[in-house]
Image (tube, rainbow, N blue to C red; front, side):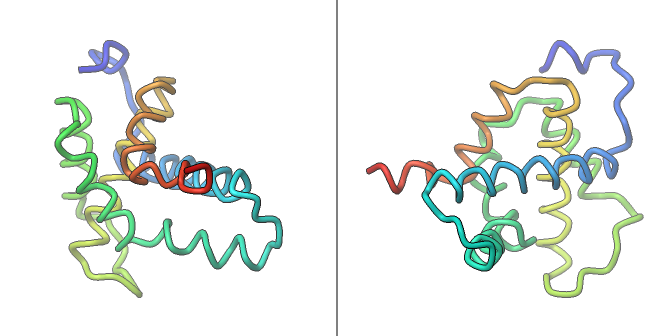
Length: 134
């Protein structure tokens, strides 16, 4: 459990998912630029491999065994929200899992636990940011 979440007043799970979406997108963009990509069209096309509901649902499967109790609870609350928009290009299940994933990322960003955030994002991406180096 994160010390900063005990008794803390966190934003709503969907607000944290919104923040988490932005934080995950920044992580992906940085990863792609670090790989040496520089053309905006290529960057946008490649980023879509990581920021879709289906891709995020798969990433969540990688980090699920690592989740702490409060992260698991945030995932549950966000993915079970009744205020989710109907997905256009994803299954309802993937969309709910992706929303939960984003809420966990958003919570870690909100409380400032950058070490844990980076650990989960690295695992979620399967070490993909190191593919160019290896």
